[in-house]
Length: 138
Image (cartoon, rainbow, N blue to C red; front, side, top):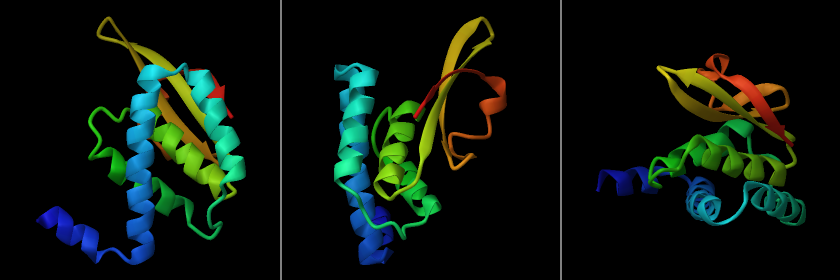
């Protein structure tokens, strides 16, 4: 019930954005298991160009929607979230770049994805200094 009350306290625009983002994150979570990353990335880029959304939505608000949605989708990894946020940002006219880094911690290989928008880390930051950048995806 608390979750429903929180959802109802949002304004209609926020509710719509959050619902669409939940569906997007769930789709991307499944798609990353089924499709090659490059193919999925290219599909999202084409779709973002043809399906724009309002450009007055702040970057922080789009990122909030992705983080909130990911909290309710099992195993919505940093890569899932970065792809979802990149798609939403590009639809609203922003340039975004996914960075993928790797590290070795306690003898184990670790990978992390984070998102930069207009030169600033907007998602997945805080731990990026521990990772060696391996790949940047525009």
